[in-house]
Length: 128
Image 1: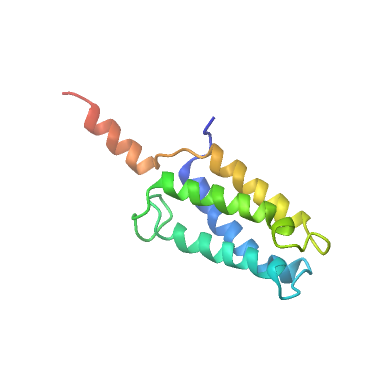
Image 2: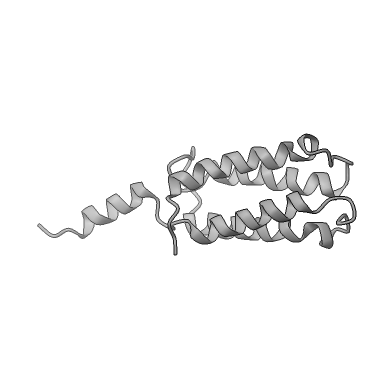
């Protein structure tokens, strides 16, 4: 069930993007390896593709919302499994897993059509 509006999703994108970038230092796991750089790169990537997504909080409406949600899903999966995939689970795993699972959940519960597009679709389907 898709209950999260795309505008809310946009705020979450930028918030999670910044959180991922600062998390290694704020949470004390910035050792300089994959445990540090996987979230930083995914956070920067999230902010970057969010700026180009076709939703309310972007600069350019180039990337369809469905593609954006697939990118979020892939990033969430990669983040969630990264401690075991890259071998740093002995150091830290909880932030990566929790934030990754959050990203997965949000990507699966966000509406695929931005509000501005849904209004336009309703206007064009009304017959006068």
